[in-house]
Amino acid sequence: MHKEGRLRARPGAAGLGDAPVGLRTLGLASARDGYLYVPAGYRPGRPRPLVVLLHGAGEDARDGLALLRGQADGAGLILLSLASRDYTWDMIALRGRFGPDVAAIDRALEGTFSRYAVDPARVAVGGYSDGASYALSLGIANGDLFTHVMAFSPGFLAPAGRSGAPRIFVSHGTRDGWLPIDSCSRRIVPRLQGAGYEVSYTEFEGPHVVPPAIGGEAVEWFTQEMPA
Image 1 (spheres, rainbow, N blue to C red):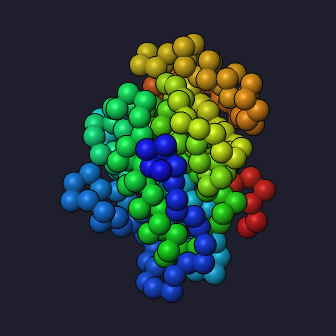
Image 2 (image 1 turned 90 degrees about the vertical axis):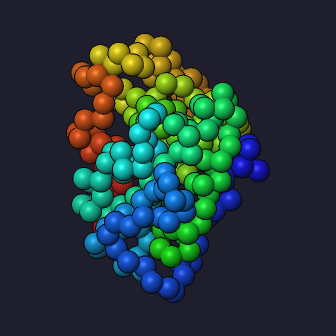
């Protein structure tokens, strides 16, 4: 099942065990592990939105976490950031085939869902660069789990299949020299829209980066009309 990019974990009734707030490592691997950040205002009886964050090529889970770490407390977000098993995500390293990264994400989600109350109507996957391409592909294949997808400067999308209809946020710098906007997002977004997805698209004057203002825009988009 994981070879097709499908995730089994689903939010449900959170366990009654210890559920600390703040930053902690996942403890799923001795190297290239991941992080879970739970905002200080978290309460077990109040489900919160969750974002799975995926780093760019050559980076690690700390870089993924940094994408939205500054907005987590104010928006009440639970952040789950993993490191890819290889230098980048399996579908890219394996040339179009999903592999061990999907299983690792599934394990991390299962552990998070078992301990924390997560709002099933606000579960997102997001990423930067290679992580953005992976987030798009994984999010579309698992639209019955992910309600939202955030793609910061993606290069492509190649879902193994399609499930559900997640809302999608895409941003890209007009001076991106690594993944040029004309051959990437300006092709990806019309393709998504043509497939019937609701897409919020932002271009900004800048290179291959995620400016804080863009991260804030993505969080506002993700949490709009969410109960206080």
